[in-house]
Amino acid sequence: MSKPNGTGFGRIIKAADCSRKGFTAAWVNEAAFRQEAGLTLAAIPFAWYLAADFGHFAILMGVWLLVIIVELLNSAIEALTDRVSLERHELSGRAKDMGSAAVTSALVFVALVWAAAIWQKFS
Image 1 (cartoon, helix red, strand yellow):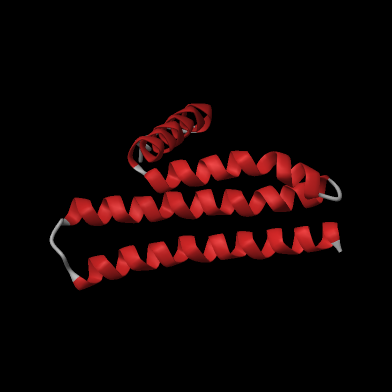
Image 2 (cartoon, rainbow, N blue to C red):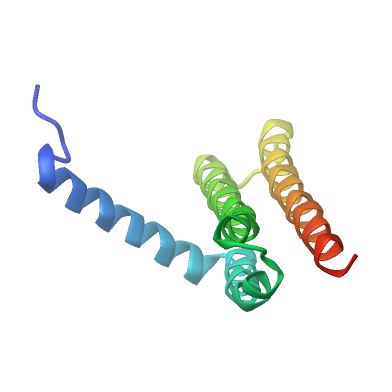
């Protein structure tokens, strides 16, 4: 059975191109993604200042990367739901609300990790 995206190194190249398209689509179409990406970039110097070592820096930035990942998945759920139908439907609303709740949960995780780092730095 032949694979539609090929095999080996060619598949990796095609997968990378799909990822580039996904990031571009999120940037162009999703204001929340742009805001969270901006916050992630803005957090880099603060994370460097707060971090006790590189591992700590990685954790501080890793939680922001988690927000980006969850936002991409939420945006994919929303796009697919809208593709199926723009009609209001209880299940469509539930899917979108759960995606939003996942993003909110990731942001709460950021707040907790960063609060702990700030507490540790200044106490």
